[in-house]
Image 1 (cartoon, one colour):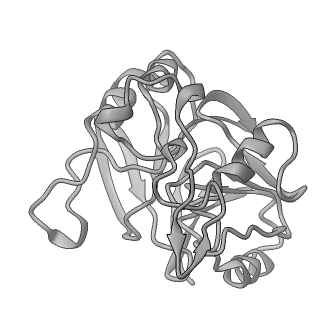
Image 2 (image 1 turned 135 degrees about the vertical axis):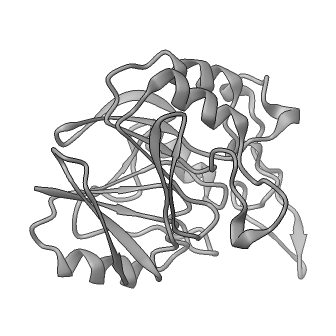
Image 3 (image 1 turned 180 degrees about the vertical axis):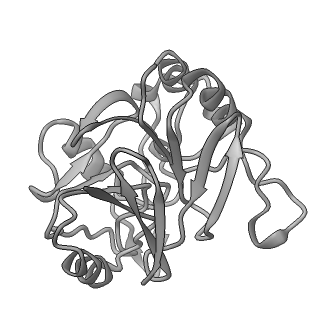
Length: 231
């Protein structure tokens, strides 16, 4: 049996539905954040999709999912930490982005966006980029470090070193490496940068996923062999 893995969606819902239709034998899919469209819309995938938060989401929708009201019955939100049982796997999550100025804040105290004026109208609360709920925090990192026997670790951010498009600046985050070193999952998947990479970090295979309009993965549930397919 194989399980699918998708990178950032950014509202490309028809593409996801097409991918799932091609693989009717794949019972469920993992996803590394940024599901929402630019208008903050979500969708009902044809197969169960287990997702973590990115940085471009409607965080009010995520708050409702945490309270047991998901945007769709087939969209299963994985809050940071774990372990989460996803099919035959134990999965851990560290969604969102790293911000030094907010890192030591309790997750419950991250302030939502107050909205901003754009072309004479107010952006809906939770859809503005200044919503601090888009970040992960130290307490969540510590919780992840304490997890063991994890099959798949999902993050939105990349580990270090990571040079998207060959740029000199390292866009990876040290805390991801720290969790990998402590947790030792069988596989790490991340997104955010819309670029496929396949490397080893702290002795763990770490795969960066393309945006879904470019490619996706199928993963064997026992061997963890990964097959990259063009969209």
